[in-house]
Amino acid sequence: MRIETKAIHEGWKPGKGEARQVPISQSTTFKYDTSEEMGKLFDLEAEGYFYTRLQNPTNDAVAAKICAMEGGVAAMLTSSGQAANFYAIFNICETGDHFIASSSIYGGTYNLFGTTMKKMGIECTFVDQTLPEEELAKYFKPNTKAVFGETITNPTVTVFDFEKFARLAHSHGVPLIVDNTFATPVNCRPFEWGADIVTHSTTKYMDGHGVGVGGCIVDSGNFDWMAHADKFPGLTTPDESYHGITYAERFGKGAYITKATAQLMRDFGSIQSPQNAFYLNLGLESLHLRMERHCSNALAVAKFLKNHEKVAWVHFAGLEGDEYYDLAKKYMPNGTCGVLAFGVKGGREASIKFMDKLKLASIVTHVADAKTCLLHPASHTHRQMSEEQLLEAGVNPDLIRLSVGIENVDDLIEDLKQALD
Ligand SMILES: *Cc1c(COP(=O)(O)O)cnc(C)c1O
Image (cartoon, rainbow, N blue to C red; front, side, top):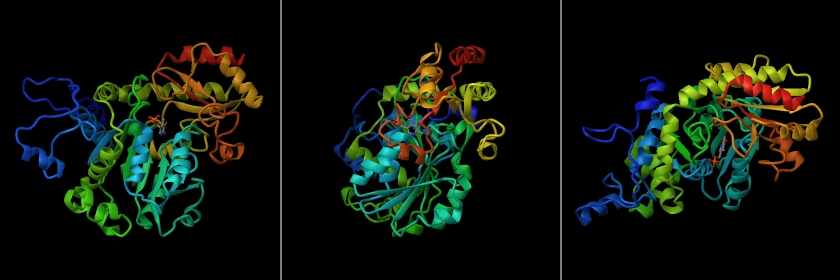
C-alpha cells in the first residue's frame, strides 16, 4: 500500500460483522477468566489489555496506523507531543547521561530538555545544526546517548540534514531521534534517511482540526541496542521491576516501545484518551489531502509576502531561493508543510501591529491545522527566553510564525494584504 491507502486502511482491520470504523474502547479495564491469565499479562509473558494507563485497543489501532505510515515496527500514543519527546529520551537516558539536540527546536522541547530534564540529572547540549560534521562531532562525550532534531523546525522552519546527523549519531553508537511533526510521514519519512526513532505532536497536522492534544513515538527497529549494550543498560540488562526481563533479548525490534510502555507509561501514565485517539484517526484519514493543500497555499502565500514591499524577509523551504530549498527538495520533494516565518519592515512593533489588523487569520497558540493562524514567538511561545537565547534558537524578535490553513488561498492573501496596507 502507498501512504494514502495506509492512511485509510492501516491500524484497524475489522473481522466479519465488526465495526468498520475503529471503535472507541472507552474502558479503563479489561476482563479475564482466570487469575493466571491476568498474571501472565503482568509478567509480559502474554499480550493483551488489562488497564488503560498502559495500553488501550483504540490507541493501539491508531498507533499502528501511524507506525505503518512512518514505516516503523512499533509505536505508541502519548497524551501530548511533550510526553512523546520526554519518553523518547528518558527511555534511554538516565541520571548522569548526556544527549545532543539541535538548538532550533520547538520552544516547549527546548525547556523540557534544557531545564526540566536537567533537574533529573540528564544534560542536553544544544548545537547549531548548520555546523559542519567535524565541528558537531566535538560535542559527543562518552556518556552521550542520543541525538535529537526536528524535520522542519518550529518556529524557524529550517530543514534538518538527516544524513549528516545519522552519520554522526551512528558513528558514535547512539540513535537519531527526530520530531517529524511538521512534515508528517506524508511529506517525509525520516527512517528512509537514517533516523531510528520518530516522535510526533499529533496535536498538529495529524489531528488537523485542533480538537485533541496528543503525541506518538515510532521505532524503526533499526538501532541495534545489543551492539552498544554498555550504553543502554535499561534495554540490555534485566529489569528488576519485571522479574528480570531483558527487553532487547526478549522483544528484539520491539524492545524500545515495549520498555517505554511497560516502564514509562506504567510509572508516568501519560496515556492518550481513547476518545482523542478516535478523533486523531479521523484526522489521519484525510492527512494526505490536507497536506497537499497546506503546501500549495503556503507556497502561494510565501510568494505573495516575498514580493510585498512592507515585508522584510520570508523563510519557507518550499520557496525557490530559500536557504533550505535544496535540503527540502532532497528530503521532501513533494512539499514541506504549511508553516512559514516572516518579518514585517519596522521590526518587532510593526509585526505586532500587523498581526492585530488581520481579520481571517487568528492569533492563537496553535499551529498546523485547517484554520490559518499565526503567532509572534518572542511575545508568546518563547517569551521566557532571553534575547540571546532567542537568537541562538534562530528566532528573530520580529519573527511571525504563520500557519497557512486550507481555506481558499485568495481569501488568505486578501486578508494579509489589507493588514499590511
Ligand atoms: C507542538 C509541538 C510539540 C509539543 O506537542 P504538544 O502536543 O503541544 O505537547 C513538539 N514538537 C513540535 C515540533 C511541535 O510543534
